[in-house]
Length: 179
Image 1 (cartoon, rainbow, N blue to C red):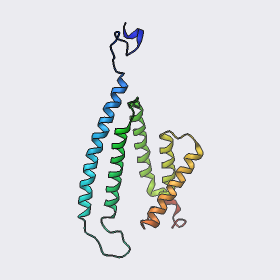
Image 2: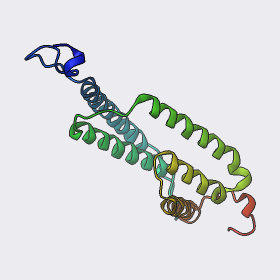
Image 3: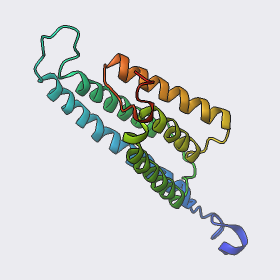
Image 4: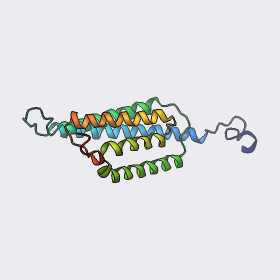
């Protein structure tokens, strides 16, 4: 009984041959767990270095360690999430490699265009289409959800940086309209 008559698991009676995509999923799980452990260690080292930064005594300012602590928390949280996903993931098919590479290339291209138009158009006018393009690129097909998500994310980020962190963002074409 050959491959042509019974599929990839029917080479010979009683012989089990694993399906290649299951082996790929197992390898990917192992890689995710190893990457998560390495990133957790790097995040811990980054946290120790952040704890050694000097504290500024100016009132109502976040101080030098503020953003490094945010980075530390994000690195540790994402690494822990990757570790849990590696442990909990089911053995299933992996997405095709070519599609992932093509999507990553398009995302990089969209990001380069975003960076090029950001100074001239300003944060709000450049970021909303950028988020919309990424949402479309990663599979969202409902136009209302794309538009609402892009506008809400842009607005929240603008408020967070402008009023929460007191960081002035490029106004571009909206100069004089947007504070």
